Length: 214
Image 1 (cartoon, rainbow, N blue to C red):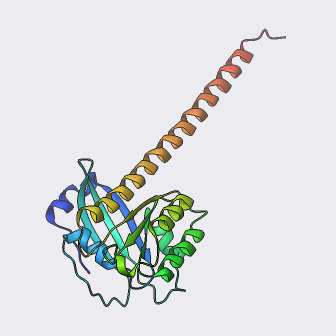
Image 2 (image 1 turned 90 degrees about the vertical axis):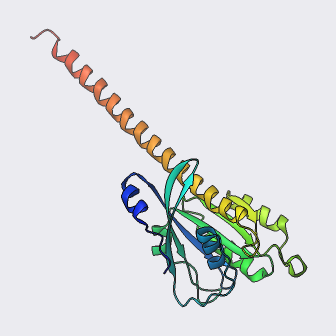
């Protein structure tokens, strides 16, 4: 397992925003290659994972330090979908398919259906766009699916690109942080609303007590 828990990360961890990302896709689409490309800027083309792998990595997002925890899932086949434990663990999900494999596109569509009731930020990634001569899934199809899922979409290649791959992870991170801020704001509004109601009720009670006694 690759772990970037340096002393710097441990020292500042209490002040970091922590974001958990699950990378989900059919076997062979390049989930590990994308994750490691983002973490180390290096490209490793062959992986032989027998189980899921977790990575930690600190990065600046909009000049603020964020500690990523990335779960590189490892489905055994194209009918092996992410567990409820994985979905409950994640703050955001990166859905990955390969433009050269239509079955992998069908896989993320099915996962997207499973996530219909989950209020969680998603990002759709089409990997291997350097293999245009082997393309089976058009960019338009990816755009339409992203629109249906109400999420961001990019075509990238882990084999050749560092910047676009990093941008995908950072865009998902920004969506997670924005959703977190929105949730806190909504909670604060509810709390303030309840406090205002209690004040009004108390004031009404005080007024009643001031009525003339019989």
